[in-house]
Image 1 (cartoon, one colour):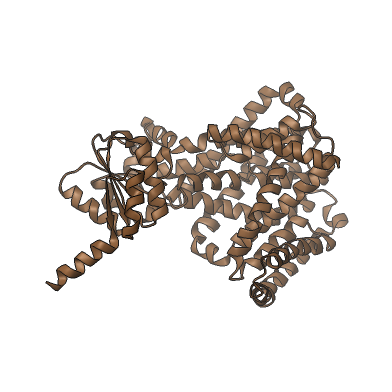
Image 2: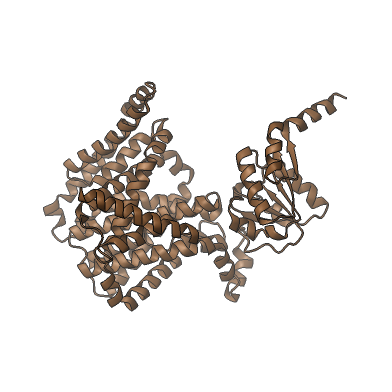
Length: 538
């Protein structure tokens, strides 16, 4: 039962670190990495069954790739093909070329240098997506661009794992890499057939039993069985898990499947990141700190200088391109998985493996800290004199303003049809306006002429503070969902005790609760619709 003791230690330390992380507003992954460093063999040595922890971490890898397979679909790829295929391909292959040349110049063999380039081409999907979702940035121009590049990275990791045996001198002869590539292609054909013909009717029949336990177990069996069969064929477990996710993704119940495995994925993925933290040798860090700090800074700078131009040529504007470069300049979690494959094939020495591991963890921690401030950082970068001519000539796209310049203004939260109509009337009255909207597609270039626009989730205090919530004279909440309107009312009243709060709601029965939470005036749709109908009858 030693493994149970170690599991309790891991989860307990993780809980404490996560509590501190939450107070500091850092992503949970940073907490898991730090927890691993603390409890690992190079920390206070609280863990004694490292092999069992690594096995649980492998389950985390399987579920991570399985969930990405479920979320990935051809429809998504087609919809964002410009950003995924052009942006993702350019970023990955430019990164591989530049980092490979750099590694080769520093004395690495060409095959090892190419592998290092593949490692540093990856960015952290987990960190970026979590922060984007928290801040409501998913639908911004830089958000869509960054996520599209991450999607390509998540897909390309599988071919990279298949290609890695080619990089050892005797690779094709001894490892059968050619056969594995053809086997991988055959598996993809089988997956497409199963996804279209076999699995959807099977899952449909399982769902019709109305047995939640049967549904969950069936999904897990499909994941692990596909991964196991893939391993029996000489390929990686992770590839099988990703293919299993693709099979499930074509079912109409894929969202339900993802929702069911999410708690398991979060727990085992947490263990995976803890296990990564356990690998970090603190003695190595202390002995080589100047080298590690310099390499981390150089890697993040080079990635920024690659990604920002790629994003700019996707026509999202200079500011948005800078933000994309800043949010993707870390090394990602899939690089850890790939590095283990490289270690297995002898493409990384122990020293280079520790160097890569340390640089990756440091870059993830630094990136998690700075991502929330990237709009402000981008705003400062574009004010550098060298950018002025570029900005005047090329920067036709808008970005998150750095900070609101208004006082005694009106803030409109939610810029759908109702919010637009209110904004147009207020602009005609010359009322100073700030608009907070989660979806950038709802905002046109013309709207910037009469209001300061802040793209982000109104429930995020940082977004409201950038809109100068403390100095607002009036706040109008036009979102249709009652629960979101309640959350926004609480948040606004907490940050500004004096502003007049006007809230739109659907039903008259929701008025009392919103007033209790701090709304000064509530406009129920059903009453206003009835008044409009009666007025039209007169």
